[in-house]
Image (tube, rainbow, N blue to C red; front, side, top):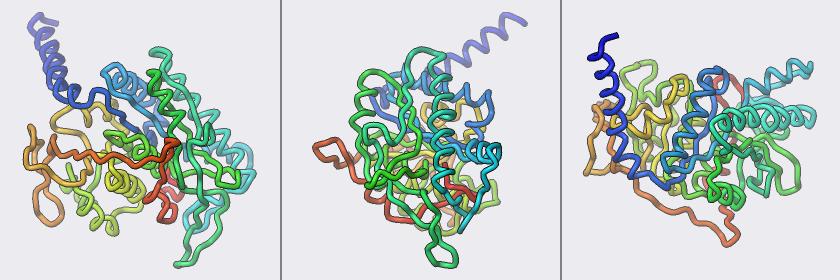
Length: 355
């Protein structure tokens, strides 16, 4: 390899670091909630890349918080144990027996595994579940078949959030890794929708960003037209688009919509199949997925190439589009998940609770 080639590669790396400077300055000290799911949870290389990304965010002065599901791992463990899976209205019926498996897999397998990967870089990650210190309170949600509610057992959404324990960990320089199981008001454990839980936590923490990893490049205004990828969308535009979205994207985009409507300045959907996609979305001018904001700013800083939406108008990434609106918390550091608990649980395209 020639010296000139080495220099060129080094210059490219330096240029990337320089490009990140304004974003590092802007987001330093900010809390970022990342919903970890999809293929990024299954592929070992992507798992390691995600863990490294979280440590990078922490070293860069941000305060990452990870919320994870684990649908594929739950299905695999139920099959190994010979427990039949029943679905109603697309949702897994979660019996007390199945709930024990859900808890074991999310808290003891997926959560612990991610904590270990992050801590390979230093003693940063601490695992929690929605049960710990009253972090989440769940409320049971039915499935719907032909417009009629049907009982699916211990499946729930977030009713309220108490961030005191998570805030203490953040203040100590830790990276909380949160498993989405939580009790209801009567102490009955539920499997939470992880997208909903991440959105509720982002609001409660007054986070600067919510980042949701998925298995697609972002939101398409007119799927399967791959040229209709949307770089930036407002909450009003997203609300109008939701009824036409593919089922697999609905829980992700609803979580983003609710988070931004309740005060999170920006929410992002990024392709978790691409290593370091979180960093590419947060720290580059072009972005890498779809950003949801309350309204666009006229004073865009280095906007990305324009992307047409399905009405033919132009959506350009605006670096100045975030408009913070603090979440309203009570004196116990608890916040009510107002918008999060107003609709039935939604399912992903595999027919399981989105997680």
